[in-house]
Amino acid sequence: MKARNAGSALVPLVLLWLAVHAALLAIILAMKFLFTKAAILAMLVMAGLAFLFVRFSGAPRKLIHSPVA
Image: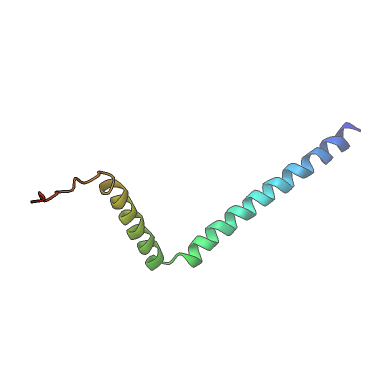
């Protein structure tokens, strides 16, 4: 009786293990076929530009007012 219950308890774990590995395989294959070198380079350039924009655009600038005569 206990062996049968242990076997039925392992089935969901095995299915979960298979689902996780299938998802990982899908992600790896998608990265392999969809992200070519050009796409990776474009993503790196966009990430660098976003970093520079956030880094250097945060400081407010003082306006220079001309005196009104």
